[in-house]
Image (cartoon, rainbow, N blue to C red):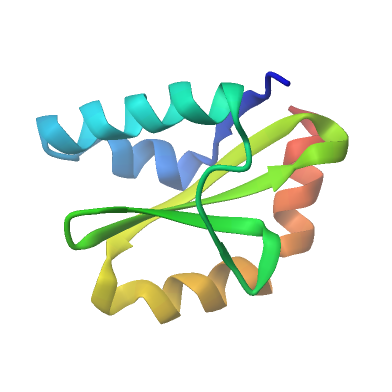
Length: 101
């Protein structure tokens, strides 16, 4: 199953300022996720996942019914709880965004 990959505007801005090795890693994850959306560690829900890169985390939402993956955040381990809380507070907005992409 191949999924379409999308980014939120805030994630796209974050991606622009990442280090070269971080950008390359994100691109590799995009390729992996297109073919296997089951990749990643579930957070609270089976469709809210993260992947680790050194001391940072990449956060994304998997919408099986839409055949889409939405990248929502990239941050340090110390910011993990803030990011998770923010994403869970905005799940409805992310779902609407994914439906309209």
